[in-house]
Length: 291
Image 1: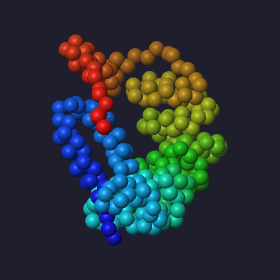
Image 2: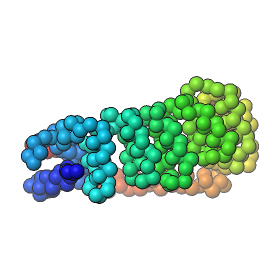
Image 3: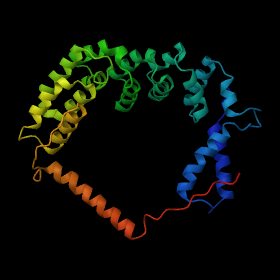
Image 4: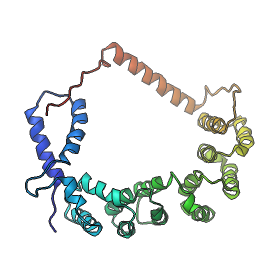
């Protein structure tokens, strides 16, 4: 199979362009210019193939795209964004879903991006999360794709929680379901009450779920004198997110978290003021590249 290193071609072109325009743009301007030039490159005919990068991949069938991706990874040739985008536009077919069964971490990472939030991929994502093959980065990526609508896998998430299988992932996802369910509310409330050593996380699940019936339990905990400043903030946020209000004065001046948070804030403000006074916040004029 012939592979074309489009990124390598672009890198050479951009190196020549930068050399020709040396000193014309600052680092920030180049960071804005280069992505625009890359998009333009996608519609530029490459003389050796007589096609643009976008058209080159658009003319491939699904299986050829999949094999091309695998071959890029096998030969350690950079995977072009234009290949990934073409696959993302078509994602959802059986071939793309099958990629999620691989034990190759790099290939699966691409497969997650390609299949995105396609609900047919959700069972595969949960297999990835529950398995031992991949690390947190891959599992997080799989979970992220389901956060917008985890309802289709609600029952499996409930089972994961009851069986204590990747419980943190399951709780985070199930707290985001759209169709409210009594079993889900009771489970989230029970987890909150039984895990008072981790108030911030479990309070966030209740606030995310959005059932105001959790308010009395949140009020009960925020009144406790032995909570720390971080717990107080998360409880207060959860109460407000559910339509409640808590304005009782509390003194956390001796709390180490309070000192850490507010000490950092004061330092950032001081640093920003110093930078402003020394001219560090002067805006630089941006220029458009010459075609």
